[in-house]
Amino acid sequence: MPYTTEDGGRLNNFANEPKVYRAEPPTGGQKRNYIILGLTAVILVGGLIFVAFSVSNAT
Image (cartoon, rainbow, N blue to C red):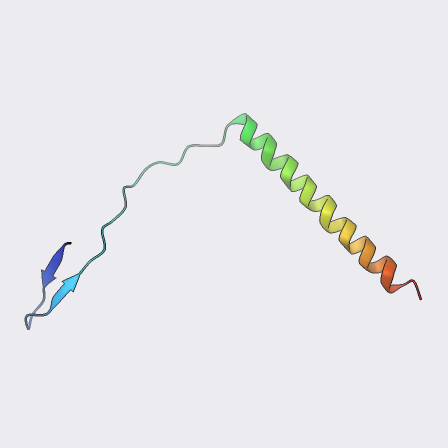
């Protein structure tokens, strides 16, 4: 562990820093999957809103 000594004799313990790496851009297949998941989420939320309005206006 990397300790440093401050004025007054106190020890200070620092966490190990993680390795830095460059992020890879998404591939074509990953982009397609993001679009499919996004459309699925929009359809699901739209369906839930439709059901909520249908049930609330059923009386």
